[in-house]
Length: 100
Image 1 (spheres, rainbow, N blue to C red):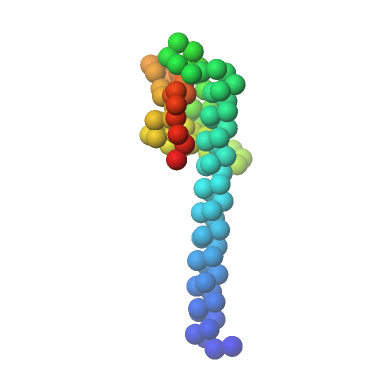
Image 2 (tube, rainbow, N blue to C red):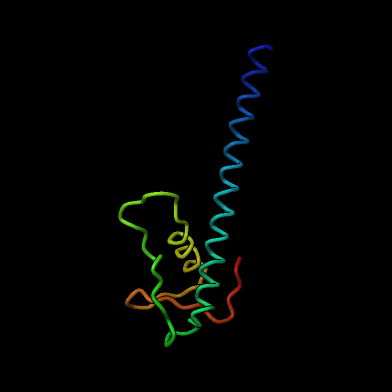
């Protein structure tokens, strides 16, 4: 097999691996966002009076094991104004949100 073909195949393999890794990360972030929204619905945190603390809002000091996507997903949801935060690190689900 010529060296040019080997280089092209290796390059395609690396690009495919990166694409696959990004797809998995995006899927895990989506699942984490759905988990947070479901958790806030179950706790009935729909306004400021019913806001709740979320134990996964801050990441652990020492990360042992698999990566937890929930703190980053919570930041994304706050930037999209789906979840709102009040003083004291309590969170609630905004009424009439649309997840993008």
